Length: 136
Image (tube, rainbow, N blue to C red):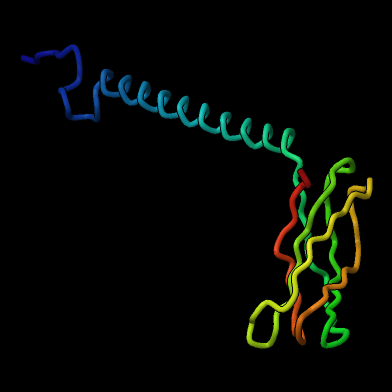
């Protein structure tokens, strides 16, 4: 005598159909949440790029001219209609600040390459670009 069964033994050959459906729903939910977070992040970056007028700069080199002067060669990138203010300083051998200068750059170009003279109270051994930002 042989008895026939309608289905496979429960729990013997993997999970049942209900467990697969729950795993699929959970995976879809996690994927949807991650997709929304990614879209919000990309949108925020795009909005910041479109609305913010950013000024960036870097110091190319500096040169000690005399005990009272240091020259700094800087390159500034900005929007063409934006006026930028860059702060530079000169440091002595003991890392004390001996000179500081704010430079206003209002040229109507997006890239400015300029040399700035910083007057110092004593011999400066280095120059540093503190930062640049749009003028108010």
